[in-house]
Length: 435
Image (cartoon, rainbow, N blue to C red; front, side, top):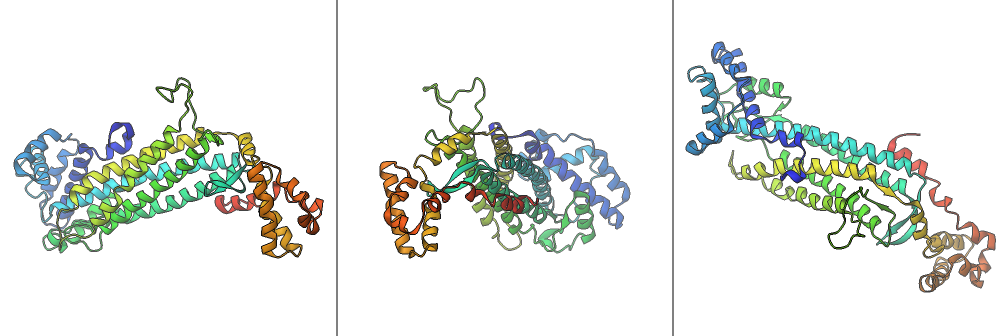
């Protein structure tokens, strides 16, 4: 991923230096286990650890690979240059390249997952703070983009919190599913390597042994992992889209923070555009772009092919780096989001009282009017408000058929905003688990 949308901790996971360090640890721990089993001499296993402080030369490995056309062999050759050819002769004993590549990839994905989990936890904290801050800040709820009934800004934040909390659970599950390793040799039968070696290596790397591998770790695990990243990206876009709508000039109920000296347009100095949330919408598309290729990687030929390899070399770094950046950016947007309560009330009152139509409808039915007639009475008065910008309550009070069923006090009572917010505490208790 380009530096513009990258953060250093996540980028470091995918650096060649990190990859080769993990490859080295896999090989060194495997030698320890084989020495414990008496398969190789202890002194040879110990010799491999002479390279534990070595900074592997990426350029040198690339040079060797240009000749060998094989990345793992190039690394093993370079390792022998540090350890010594004789001392290193038992490195990779009974193993196959996928033992190293797949186990390393899953180590990288679990480390990436740990960062993403922390990112989501940070976003949840920001959403919770803003939810309680605006728990009782009334705004109009919309369906199809049209005024529906009153809600609160706090409920909007709480809704996004609940969604991200589900994503936190999904991310933890995805981490657990991807945290497997395989040191099972050619076609996964352990013919030339003891299963105890796999158990030892996985234990040292914080993984669990893959119950049954072929020559690769099954790719349904990876498909589930990247699908989870796609869902999280979609949730980010969900929040971003709401903020973009709220920042529209005609709405202006909330807006991204606009810093001193910031410019919104090269042509129009008045512009304050929702550039961060628009950016998040685009980044979400990039993350989701990896989901289908990850699913197509599940079907491999027999015990192994490498049709998945080129895909994963790209989507592993790109999706995790992008999602890490997006989560951090969204957290900053939420923390600094400007909220305009008065604009929310002004918007709700553009068509005075109109959003209370359901309360009047229900009151008429409770007063003995059929639902069909009650809907007709309410709608005809509502249409006057749409067309003429009159006051809905005044129209109802002037309607003889409505007044035949409801008194003036009964009509007036239906315009109490508090009616729509009376269960906010109950909803918050469900979302945040607090009484």
